[in-house]
Image 1 (cartoon, rainbow, N blue to C red):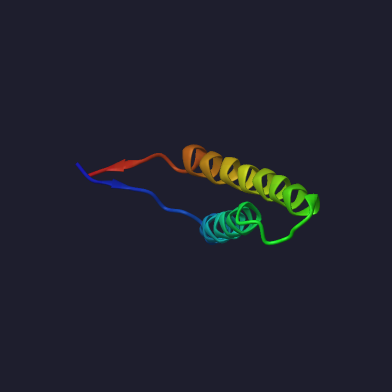
Image 2: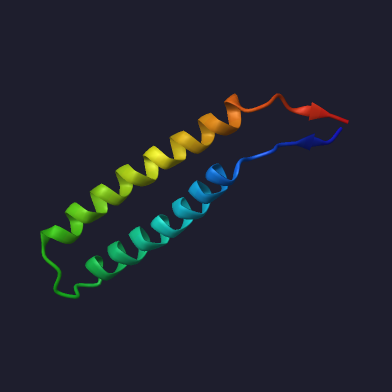
Length: 73
């Protein structure tokens, strides 16, 4: 049995954005924890990135789960 999911280009773009934002968040936190002289605004930015990633992730999962029914071969 094969499952086929069709995703829109908007959902695909969101997935790429999530990946990019996650990498940016990871880099930011690594640099901050490495003691590279950042102030608390870096942590505030990390919180914002986390919220944006969460919003996009929720939108993508909703689009996939609410999308066309899964076709079975």
